[in-house]
Length: 102
Image (cartoon, rainbow, N blue to C red; front, top):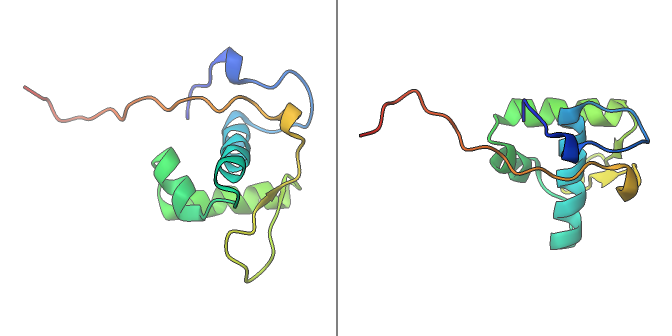
């Protein structure tokens, strides 16, 4: 998620970083596809990051007013940004390994 292609950028709308935009786009897409919001573990698997990283992103999105959660209720993330303002969810690049493969 370090480098985001130009196609994945929203044209106009709320201000958020590339990483936040991808998180919002994932939450929106997951919710539409599965008819329920993702758990933080779902986000962790998709973005290939640690649980604390996902939790911090969720807290950051909530503080910025981009999502809302209901305390004590699992899978309660609601995106407060209109779908038209969200970037396209870009595919992740393969994980690079420092191990040489033969």
